[in-house]
Figure (cartoon, protein in one colour):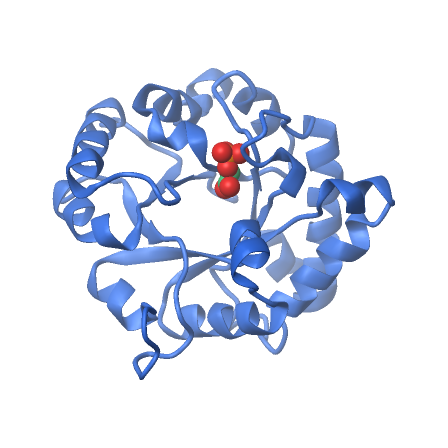
Length: 254
Ligand code: PGA
């Protein structure tokens, strides 16, 4: 019922020429994808060339961040209108790197999530605890706070299409993937919270991704968990063969 979703987060990598080369290779490797949604999120500067290179492909475009206003005097920012204009369908919001290095708060992330939904962009709301928070036994309250903060004031119908990504901060870019069991426990917790927030049916419809050192050698075990509906991939999304193998998890399972 929930279609698997594999998202590549390119972060601050790839010039336009590199982006075109990467996506041309991906296009060839993923020519026959079916039964799975595949999204790539280039840096803003490469979105347009990637959109052009992906014409006619089933790979979909996303962005890594945005402002909550449609336009305005916000030097250095990019708006949801600009993203839809370039053909984006998804936007990553509240990534831990944005929370950590750019001071993003649940309040502003919530403004962005609501703006994305208004502009028909599917928000990928990132939540996740740090290593210290996990050690202190605070994983659930931290995740609950980020989830309820990010989704505040959004009625269930308006929230349709929202994606949640569980990304334990200690697993991002470290090679220390959460075990499938650790991830599944938090995913089940998120599913329960969504049910409380939006009702059981709407909660069951939300795709919950896992992110943090996802690679070809751990994708199959992660995707075998019933509450893991897909993955948000950083480092491995810059390597076409690795990313294609991650997308092809389905061939192993079905
Ligand atoms: P990683 O990054 O796959 O390099 O750990 C994931 C992310 O930050 O979304």
